Amino acid sequence: MGVRRDPMAFRRNFLNVQLAQSVTLSIPCFILQWRTGRVPTEWKDGIIVTQREGKKSDCSNYRPITLPSVPGKVFAHVLLGRIQSTVV
Image 1 (cartoon, rainbow, N blue to C red):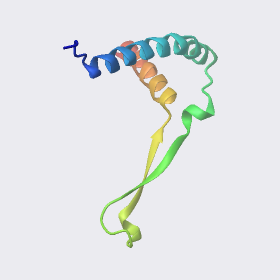
Image 2 (cartoon, one colour):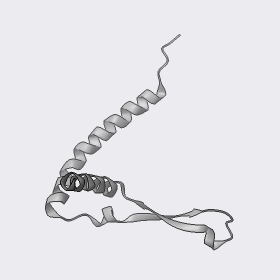
Image 3 (tube, helix red, strand yellow):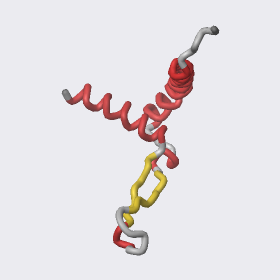
């Protein structure tokens, strides 16, 4: 019998490598945004989707949900960390 490999281990390793590469590429961009004080509009925008609860025919069952962009969320988290470390 061959050696059984854990499929989740491959996924975890792949995601860890992707995360490391993403962070390496994102840091210079975040530094530039921090120094200039300008944030790209795409980072501020979000995708609006609707979520339905109940019957499809009743319009009051739909509500909009905004999904912010991933770079915007990450930058906001970094910014929040900087502000909290200064205030606290």
